[in-house]
Image 1 (cartoon, rainbow, N blue to C red):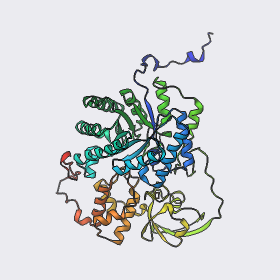
Image 2: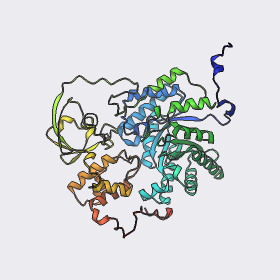
Image 3: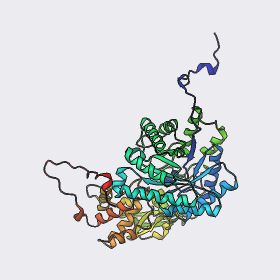
Image 4: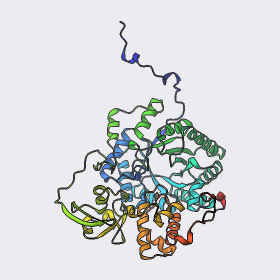
Length: 499
Ligand code: FES
Ligand code: FES
């Protein structure tokens, strides 16, 4: 019998149809330290782990890396500064980027770091552009374009590259895209990031929007403006869409370690690079470099095994356990806790009440807000043992249907949540306010949620929702006529909405 060599025993249906990659080498943009950390189950890792992650990214050939969202608070500023310093010190071949809302303050938060370190960071300024997003935020087109221009002009003045990150691009009509592109080019944007923020696109739609974007930029004479692709995995298509975007001509494709990211996650960087190598678009990466990169893991609450970014289990300090008796959501609870246990850890890890989010973990973002004896507190900086004999209420205490809590109803009706990461903290700050002041002014509402950071910039709708919840009868929807079906309020003409 004739022997068959192992390589001859495989037939590859991909090969005969494989086209040689003709475009420029796609850059990969690592969003693990920004989008990855916005996953509801993620915990911001210690700085040392972030520094190790930077080196692992460089080893697999990542081109650009997001260092975070400096405007999120002092810890974000500290970490972004340290990461930038490390790139400079170790001469890592990584181009640093950082996220900002399209506000002058957020852009300046980044450029201040550039000045301090003496190195440049590309500003990735995000704003929702789709009509549905503008509708729930009560934004006019004029206001939106003005905001994009002002942030871009701030970046230009400070001498840093401005990339407009168009949230929800894949649900934005062509006329709006054209206007936004024109405003971005006008204020000096050198990059535009097309975002499939809610994982809506499929590979055909992805290819179409990239081609449309490229053609529009050419028509605007903006030949030097590059495109990025940032896609989420809600329908399991993140990788397929990223590859479609690269094939259609984007220069930068975003991904994260293990695909961690907001909600269902982002494109897996490991799979993205591997597939681009197979397609002949990038050079191969040594296995040992991938092994190091794969060890980047952000703490996942589902495991209940805290992992550092180096993949090792974080040592629990040896402390005597102390008995704690308290009330959580009107039920008596008795359990043993370490004296250093925070209230947030107790709720999420010991009681499985994961509605309170673990954002910054140091009192900056408000995502962990709960009520302690009726007053909002930041559970991440409240020791569990300080709650002995007291009453804790979490977002899980808000009633669902049929006795739907007015706050939940109003948040739903106004579209006050987008990714939802800040929502439980917002709800509990609002609940604390309404129990003290049943009919607060809008100014009082703003003050009450001033410690709650919404990275999706949803404050307008959130204030509306809390105002509605404070007086549901005054804002009740009109009763349905006999035979009439419930319909959502119709979208008004896009440009006619008033701010
Ligand atoms: S997690 Fe950010 S304030 Fe507590
Ligand atoms: S942070 Fe996403 S809705 Fe507020």
